[in-house]
Length: 367
Image 1: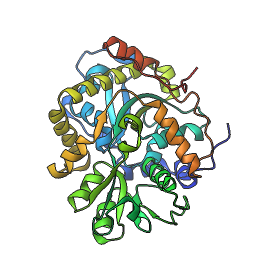
Image 2: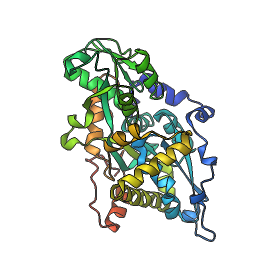
Image 3: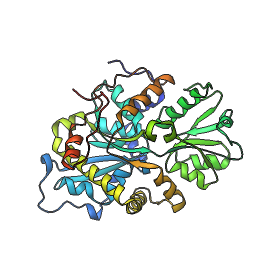
Image 4: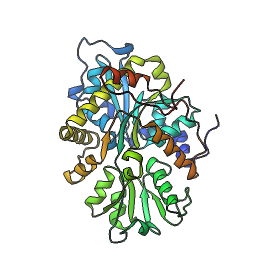
């Protein structure tokens, strides 16, 4: 299968990023010893594994991983096999870690999953479950932008060239009939690629007039006086679209299916607990964010951010296909062959055992 020519800079970053650089992305946090995650003495190892290495972002849209770790739910299901963790700030570095074997399973956004799958010719990963929907907003300076039409001519931040929010914003711009060069971000709207950590300062300084960003960045901007102009969920049928998936290396899935099933069982149980106990879960996610970053979110940021995210086991596969089409239309991606990107057999086994409805792969499942 030919590799894409798209997401040129992003894909180049995936290829070129040395593993040593992962330390700058939070990689290595698995060395931290969480008191509620000790392996129970005498517990049996799953698939004979000493450990399973799990990656995720320090981001509320990765709430399943945050809460599952903080509450010790992954460790509980893994028994005598140690749950180890690595945190990341960007999709390319997590994909590189998965490809190199530095992690086994990861929580990640749809665009990096698509890019990683296509870049490897469909050989390095599978999406094995869903985690979250929503949690993305267009927030703007109300003194400069009062209506959607006012976005034309303004400077709007997205997190990274070709990332999930960047693709969504470029697609929205095109639907307005405006023109923007996807690579440079120049045109009827200036698309300014800015790391989420920097975006609030860029907004305060006036370097950008708004941002199309995930939570909690959107709510951080609102706390600085920005206003929500558009919730991306309103652009999707049933207001649902994938923002976080669970991926696994194909070799790990083949060699250690019981370990993968255990992590998926922990994910399903974590999601059920989050949805049944939203306030406790919110506090748990925030506590893990503090452990990972040294800083928790204030209530004025945490509360609205949490409200806009839907936790789900469903990977919402049809919306992944649509997001890929958006990247193609933007000129950032050659038409990808996504057949085989999903393997939901173990997730559906877990869901059935829990008495929950099974989920669909939109015809993109592994054969």
